[in-house]
Image (tube, rainbow, N blue to C red; front, side):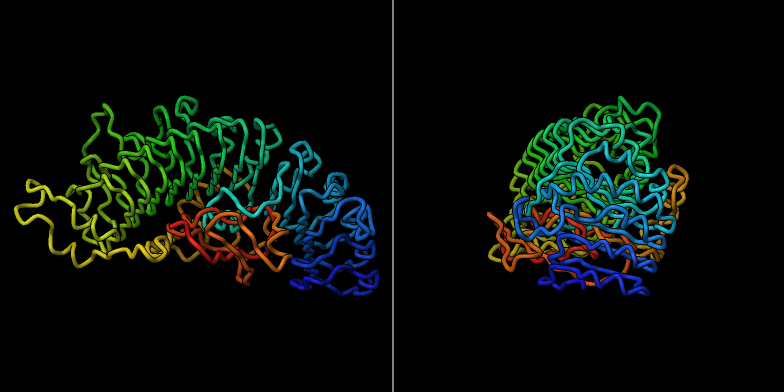
Length: 522
């Protein structure tokens, strides 16, 4: 029944389908389940997307509950369960308290996706649930179209197994810490009080592979080395995406005491952080030997990517695996590496609206693999080339052959799309070294690329069920659902992340979202 948008009521006769194994009600207008669903004793996969909400007095409601008591517990062979509701549906506040304990009876369950309004309700879940592939959204969030998360990063989050999205939280309750301990992906959205991630407990977040931070207005740094002691900080993290953080000053403060901190990081995107002044310290960047993609946009206080400070550690090569570097709208950027040797494997460079970046050091353009430099023609022609570094000829002729001018009348972002995939492996979502490390610290279920991807969490009623999409400011983004297999790779399209704010990650969708840009901010 998936995609039958005018289908509003499941008849009681559905109970006659004794051999039915899969029931998918995604993108329908079903508002509740009939009790006869419990008669489908061979059902292995149940997907509910109950978007319609008309208020308590609506005549459309024929039941005070979304899922009748006792239905879920009767589906003894169920393997995949996903229930999405409108977060404003008051029926769910009571109904979920009945459903959660019933999950204990589902001994065959492999994947589960749920919206849980309050952290304390996590206590109703049976303990074994965290050994499964779970996708939880927790928090009192409002359904919305515009999200502070970057679209491509949000898609990677949806592809991840064992994920938690914590929305509009205050402090970090112990129930959330307990879930994070078993999570491989964390999306912290609009948290109201958190100042850095140390409040989760460093051992609780060490197995994370994907971390998204969006609109956490009090966050000043992501990790504080003063609280990590000798512990590893994010030893398994592959992707870090930070967006719309109005008070963020730095990624890492204090000394990093372990060489494994951020040691597996492959993709870093920073978007619209107006107070961010420090991206890499020498102590921090020394650990990022595997970073492949770096994208920074809308950070007006950044004057250099690497801040040397008073450190004496200035020899050596940094970011040796970096392939793609995107720098957009950085009005104070003067230098990329402050004269340090950086990016000897760079292949793609995209620079736009960085007016004070008027020269390149030979230590920044040493890569023999460089394929393309994209930027504004006037900016490129005005660059100065130090005779001491580049010789009397100035700009090497080879750079002219790889420079590609940006057409300012066209979409800037799409022109800077290098489509760089951070995962070169073919076996799955993580490389073997990471998987071994993850298994060491996580001791939970292994990543299973053959396991079906359950419905992803979220709430997109206004986009999915209406024929029109209205977003009050450009770019206008719409999404569609397209069939695809289980997620196997964490790849990053580094420029897609700058297509302004996309749809909220608040509703489960069976497949990753595909984003189409209808307008741009440029």
